[in-house]
Amino acid sequence: MTSSSVTTADRADAARRFRTALFVDFDNVYIGLQRLDPVAAEAFATNPAHWLSELESGTDAEGDFSRRFLIRACYLNPSRFSQFRPNFTRAGFQVVDCPSLTQQGKSSADINLVLDAVDALAAPTHYEEFVIVSADADFTPLALRCRAADRRVTIMTASPAASAYRAVADSVITADELADLVTHTASTLPVENVVVEPPVVAEPPVVTAPPARAKKAAQEPVAATPPASTAARKAVLQRVQTADRPVPLGTIAQLAQKTEPSLPESRWAGAGGFLPWLAKVVPEVGVSSRPPGYVWDPTRFGEADLPGAVTDMAPSALQNQVVAVTDTPGLSQSTYRVLLTTLAADLAAQPFDRAETSRRVRDACQKAGAKIGLSTVNFVIGGIIFAGLRLTSSVTSRDLATAWADNVVGLCRGARMQMSAGDVTAIRAWVGGGLLEG
Image (cartoon, rainbow, N blue to C red):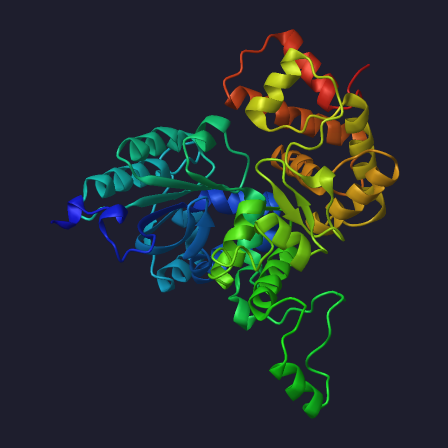
């Protein structure tokens, strides 16, 4: 059997290891991250070896997998970003210079990336996964072509991406997830290399007992959490406590099973299933079993942070469509007003820092009675930034409302929504919290 006809299913020893082709639209990602998080942008550009290693393993609905990056290609404009070329070359990337070819300054990255990806599709080596690192919806036909050839498609974005583009991917790494990926290591280190300081729980310490007592304890069965569940407990706590948002329930189940493969066979240490095991062994985490289910650190998150959980209005047909095609949070006009005015007040009082500002605004909104989660605050702040507004102390709530409304209308147009002038006015009045009226 030739390599061109071999798939993951054909290789019994594959253990879900993908032959992967990685294509990076550098300009698109770097500029997008600069708007969202300048620290993340520099980390992405200066240390690609780090985030590449982070992508070498993952988990999806079918379980764990690993990647072997057979193609690593980076496309950048040398007149603007040549200083970053050595970083990618050192990390094993083929760097393709894509200079500007038009008076508007648009580079040839798109066409070069597409041509190389199509060549990879026809190559004798069967690339099982194509990773496209760009938020540019122009790559939607390429993603469709890859799917038609029965290849897995993963998209990594650094700015809002059109819903049609995201829909053709098997997996999407969002801008916030990418920023976290390139700047943090704790959440992805192997469990045995991470020192986890678990919160105080009702189980006896084993490291502070006198030697004789410790020896006796080792010889007697312990009624508390068995050793296997202790290892899985540490892994779950480490993942949940370092995540910047609620974690999908399936991801946590796979992590526990990976840490201790015997758990399913033992009916989850006698608990009868994963959810009862989680409640018994890791009671300090928050859990929602409503599909798809999430697990979170209750000291930092709550039900309001779950995707799609924050909807406090009886939406119109137009609002329903906007929420469905753009992921715009389904808040009422009055709640948007609270969010935007609270953000303006925070910016006037303290310098903008994406993580800290988001948390302060979330806390202030909830104190005011508005059930707004951190993910919602992050989404709105990201949209305002991508609309081009600099978040300084002089920004007013009306400035924020204008930028946020511009972003939402732009997302609607990018999703090819048919909108009349009246529809645009209604959308701006809604998401602008009524601050743009009059």
